[in-house]
Image (cartoon, rainbow, N blue to C red):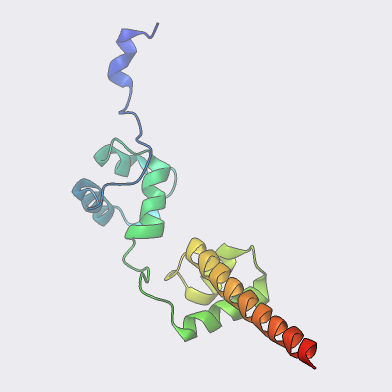
Length: 142
């Protein structure tokens, strides 16, 4: 049986699932006050005080992957794709943090790079398959 005296020390239980569609104003206000350089795993307690239903690491993740105004949320350009390809050639697929930092200097996240690379690789594989199928069907007709 839980100790009733400890109830006042327990934080609100973290909520699983998606964040509400408009980001909570307390989170945005707090993120504006806390410098991004101070928003580390240890410093997220300040943010969590304003959004008690999310734990510190989730607040940090939301900032770094979604809310950060330095991020480019728009579509990928041909120049972005070229920069991504060059960075992957240099650092290798799987080193997404290095790729993102080298190619985009904080404007695209490692997760964005990984997802885009998957789409580019899938498109390249599909094009290669079409060429192979055309060649094999052409040779079968001869």
